[in-house]
Image (cartoon, rainbow, N blue to C red; front, side):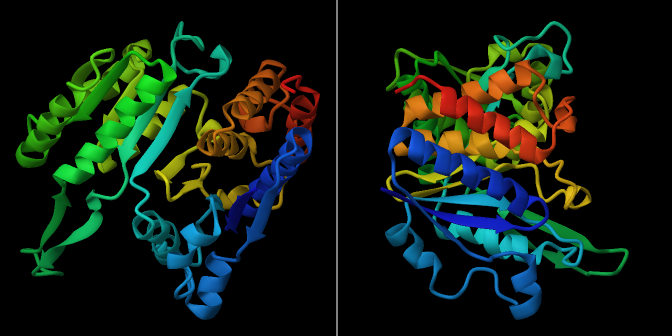
Length: 354
């Protein structure tokens, strides 16, 4: 039995969550696995009503009560500063120490790629983004605010242990999955202290993985190479800030945010899985949201649970749907969210894994 907390959130979050629940229930029936699903109302409506993101005392109980969290989306124009997003999503990320952020960049069909002459064999990488340090800690200050002499200072903090554990996670993944290269991306030529620490820890960890090639790129060069020659990348490990940027660039070359899943993991404790397309308020109520990123996030959840073959079934279903143009309009297809979901359910139901 696996217990999953559902957080639909805002915007199209509830729509793609409903599609995800259909898929999970199909998997349960198809593969005789018990999934217990509990839903909570954390999002803009509750924040506006009660000023509550995650209720007091709940965060500490989550790893005791659940194996994973499935997230929809956050974002509401009534909360322009995304205060509830910081309270909920960042609260989960930092409060549960979800230090591994994994973003696959995988092209399913060459028609989705804006790059010339690149097909599915060229784009298949996994980005490991450190998820709990760097500039996202919100450390800093403003001096002389509102005057011509105003100075804004943001501090970026990196620790040996924080860097070591994400780099180990990247190498361990490469070793388990037969990946041949791990690339460190940083800006150590300009960011002296943090960059030096990342470099030293990376080289130290790499010594324990003789079967894996370890190399390095500055972040500006890495961005250029992701466009010029994406096939050179296999596993990428990088900082919180650079991982945030590069993973969205990766989504752009692999078909867009509608195909961009993510995992936020504290190994042995709990993990959160989330499509990264955001709340997309313009699509709410139109039945046009793309559910595929949610389905691929569920595939990552199956990997986390150890159901690797089931994850492959989901990925194959998405690939076949794309190949057949059985997609929502953002991917060039004619289908509604409901119809695209139904197609994936049929693919999974008809699979011959068991």
